[in-house]
Image (tube, rainbow, N blue to C red; front, side):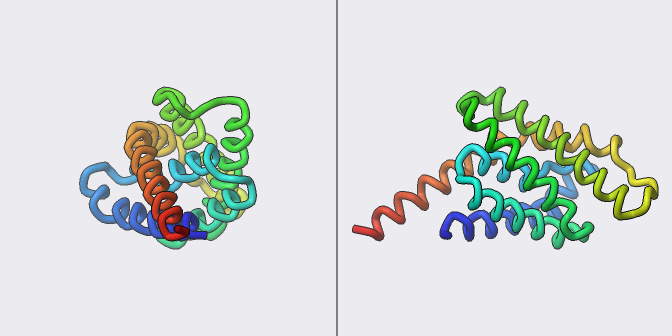
Length: 167
């Protein structure tokens, strides 16, 4: 439960950071997807139910902050979590190239899923996609090692604090 709350708070911080400071640095539309990185990390470090619920709520928070179609991002993030969680049984997340490559592929997958949902919900109206999907996947992959490092530190701190409070 404590980790769930930490992820919710972190998502609000990341989305606020994305909506303010990063808008100045990066051109519109190619901002890194911090929430996707968090869900990718969850896929390798959390159980099924806990990760799905956290991914769903992270997606709802992202849709709320970004004024998107509610549920589109949640759908994409739950799918990304499921794929990542299945892959976590087959491979390790120790190497930086695996982290970066995995985040890049999952960012493209999420972009395609959200695009498909938006096309269906908006009755085939033209929704811009390819101009933003690949640059966003690249920036997301490039910042992913920094976010993974932050998430690892926060989880270690939370586990140490929990173990200390039990004594």
